[in-house]
Image 1 (cartoon, rainbow, N blue to C red):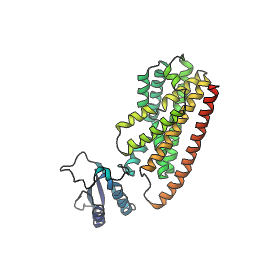
Image 2 (cartoon, helix red, strand yellow):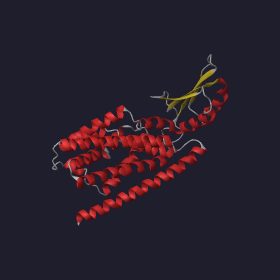
Image 3 (tube, one colour):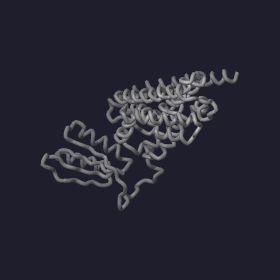
Image 4 (cartoon, rainbow, N blue to C red):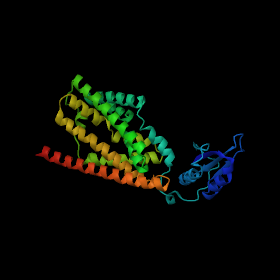
Length: 330
């Protein structure tokens, strides 16, 4: 449950109260008009109707400059509201609203000093873990690396047809992977690299199982975000880490191991493409879409274009993996 707080002109009171009644919100509180003519109205809204209520509120207040809609967390409600529907009969739509998702996911696409610093630190940690064959250190780098965020943000942006967020996500993704590769190349040139590290060599081997893992992990990432199960996101970050293959690619290039670098680069490309593609499809299945008809039409065009691009890229990568496997076997 959430509390939706609306601050708007007192003249909207009857309309807002009608929205609350239409969507059968759990409870409504209304304050007195202030000196500026605005009035505060709060609604206690369950997860199933929250998105519909927000859409209705934005349709009424979207053009108002002095209106504000706030979504506030609720830790507990006593006495507990009666459950009209069994859990199994409730819809499978997302429990987190579009607006909450946007605020949460957009943060992962911000290209700032904190993002770059986390990429730099996690690259150093991952490189040391890979060279020293220390799986605990590698897992630590997987958890702190912020590279999953821009890929999830890219999938989310295409679901909404938000070109601004698409470009922002692409820029952040390129900057993050580019920084990790550059640092890893330098580390590969300066640090003596021994090819007896199983953790290092593991990131140079890619097969169809890597494709399946990345697809499943991308879908799990979106599921954890849309259902507010943030604790499972850590497991996803470990399962389909983007940083270790990027660090391996850079170190192999820096150390002159170009054949092994090819495998690491292929694994990195597979992870990026599969995570983004699976995330796009999962956002679609979870019912994440724009609010207005015009935005929905724009999003459909954007989604169709990008989904075709990523499917073609995945098909090319699978073909390369199979061809590479035959060449190695031969």
